[in-house]
Amino acid sequence: MRMVDLIEKKRDGMELSSNEISFVVDGYTKGEIPDYQMSAFTMAVFFSGMTKQEQADFTMAMVQSGDTIDLSGIEGVKVDKHSTGGVGDTTTLVLAPLVASVGVPVAKMSGRGLGHTGGTIDKLESVSGFHVEITNDDFIRLVNQNKVAVIGQSGNLTPADKKLYALRDVTATVNSIPLIASSIMSKKIAAGADAIVLDVKTGAGAFMKDLNDAKELAKTMVDIGNNVGRNTMAIISDMSQPLGFAIGNALEVKEAIDTLKGEGPADLQELCLVLGSQMVLLGKKANSIEEARSLLEESIKNGKALESFKTFLSSQGGDASVVDSPEKLPKAKYQFEFEAESDGYVSEIIADSIGTAAMLLGAGRATKESTIDLAVGLVLRKKMGDKVSKGDSLVTIHSNFEDVAEIKKKLSESISISSNPVKPPTLIIDKIS
Image 1 (cartoon, rainbow, N blue to C red):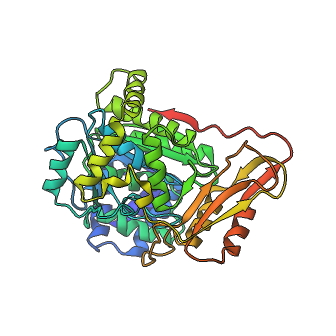
Image 2: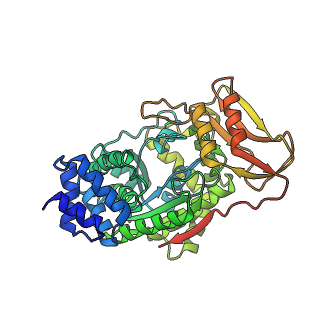
Image 3: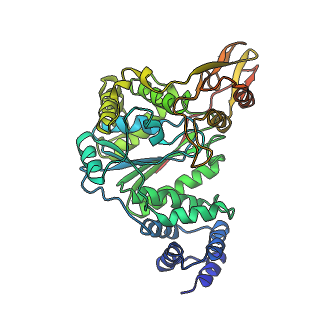
């Protein structure tokens, strides 16, 4: 078998066999296939696409390129959730304890963030003492005991994907839906889940800004998951404006606590209930979406969800007293208000631009070496469609430096006010199963 023949075959739109795909992925991972040939192959995929079978085979070849996590020691159906990212996306902090509180095991492998704010681990480390450096045995024990635990990503999970992503990044082939879908799903499958719920974002703050592209990505990932024996479904949700109010690590932990109390932002709570209901249904703890949602709503109402969060934090060394006393979370030195310059209605809040403003404050990482300031960030006071008067606060800036002129300039470019009423965007756009 020769790589040049497989490049030609894929260039001409022909289907590769499972063995041929394994040859490509295995050879590239081992360094036997050079970058220039793999670049040609990814460009061929970019233009010719992949069949459902090719996508499933390509994903599994990447899974098999490194370690896989064995979760067979955990009782019940292990359901994982993946979001394609966004601004103020606090869902994991809410979903993990909420879904665990009704008996569905959540064995979450998470990473650190590169972008607007930290990843799930960075956010959780806003809680003093919390850590994810636990052994696999402790991880499984904690999930069996508490139904929830979070561990850091393994160093040798899907090495083919890490190598391939770096190549795609410099060869203009990142935006290939078969390659994006295989990249995401290989990591989810290697992490050991039995079932997967996907939250595919669309809009200004999303990777997939176009709705049709988001739908195609969601369908491709659902097909891959189901073709390799993982019960998979996807929700397509709006990210034209930030989710919830808070953008920043400790600020998002506080917002997650509020949401678990039933006092969080309406959009964040609704998305968590929609995603959580799917997780409970796939986890076989309910017979219908309606029953699953009812279980979650009751858990918030009776305080079980909040207790689950406390147990989760303390079991991994965190100071669970922050749940009742959020003032113990890291706090920025200064707070400034960004005010409306006219009366009207909020017509636009450009999510990725707001995220950039949060990163300029220090809430995120521009590079892997950047240090995150867990205390800083932004809290929206208004969302799209809200009526405002001149002088009303639109955003509270939490900063550890006094000169926030650059931040205010960025916010001014990110938020628009119209004289006419504006309809807020639809949060849940579609469901793909």
